[in-house]
Image (cartoon, rainbow, N blue to C red; front, side, top):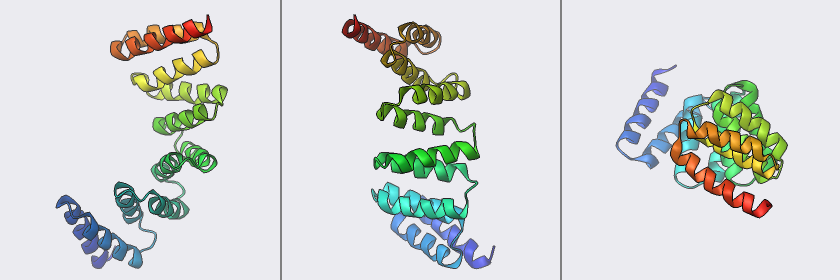
Length: 190
């Protein structure tokens, strides 16, 4: 890496520390003019756009990042997340699946994919994604909570209750919330 690129990167980081995001963005843009495929600069530029509320610009930058660096799972995940937020479901699903293809152990990509599938009513596929998420993050309550809800929606009450019992073992507050929701669902079913 040239001294000019290192200097621009150092300036951008320093400006970020000082809270000067606009000036840092200018440095990252200058860096990208010299090295258009610089992964750090692309990721940082996308982050700055997203933080400023310009998701469309962040998506464009992340699309360039994954084009230049298709084997970087975090780039695919960040792109998927923003596409999902923009309700561009087909593109988000493809990006989540790319992230998982690059890094099958990326639990947050499995979780994001699952939530997208739930929103689409694709509950069987969502259950598979949530099961993988809970295998990768067994002590995180989020995947378990969503999996129990999916199981209730799939009319698999026994499985939802089993998950509730599991959650009670390590996350009682989340388990209490889930129990209330399951009780309401049972009232609606029964």
